Length: 277
Ligand code: AMP
Image: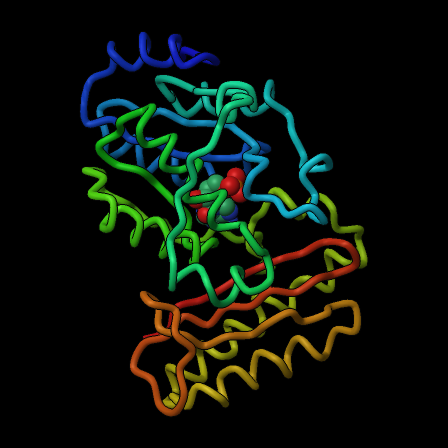
C-alpha cells in the first residue's frame, strides 16, 4: 500500500493504478462503516484509493474540528489489511493554500435538515469532494447512507458539474444494539452511549409501522419523536420525513421517504436515518 501526502506524490502513484479506480473519501478514525465502503470498492474496482483528511471547511466555528478524533497509524494498518492500493493524506496547506478562493455551492438540496443547522457545512463538503474527485480522478466514489443528505448533495453535484464518476451509496453499518457507527461515538460516556440506542429504536419503529401500513408522514415523525422523548439525555434538533432525492419535507401519505433525525446527547451531536418504501 502506497501513502501519498503531496499532490505530486498522489499524481505519480495514481498514474500507476489500474482502472477502474474506486475512491473512498474519509475523515479518518476509521470504523467498520468506513471499511464496508472500502470492501465494496475493493469488490468493484481494480484499484482502491482512500483519502484521509479532516476537512476544516465543513466544520462551523462552534463545532468539534480541533477535538475531532485522529489516529493515522491505526487507520493505515486497517487500510493495509483491506488491500487498499493508495492512501492520500493531504494537509491543510495542500488543500487550502493561502491564496485559496474557489468554492462549490450546491443550492436547494443543501438547505433543509443538516444545512439548516450547520451553516456552510455542505459548501465545505462539496468543495472538498470536488477537489478529491479532480485530484484522484476515480471512475467510482463510495459514500455511506449514514450521511444521507451528503449523499444527495454529492449526487446533485455530480449531475450538475458533469463529473464522470459513478456515485455508490452503501448501507449504514450499526453496532449490535442498533446505534449507527460513527467516529463521534467515542465522545459518548457510558450513560450517554446507553441513551443513544433510542435513535435507531425510533427509526426502526417507524419503519416497521410503515411496513404494517402506516404511511402518514406526520404520524411516522411523531412515532420517532415519542421514542426519542423516552430518553431525557437526548435533545432533538429535528425529526424529518422527506423525499429521499430532493429532501423536501413530506405531508400526508407517502410511498417512499427518508426518515432522518439529528440530536445532541450531552455535548455530542448524532445523526441517523432510515429509508422507507
Ligand atoms: P466520515 O469519515 O465521517 O466523513 O465518513 C466517511 C464516509 O463513511 C462517508 O461517506 C460516510 O457516510 C461513511 N460512513 C460513516 N459512518 C458510516 C456507517 N456507520 N455506515 C456506513 N458508512 C458510513
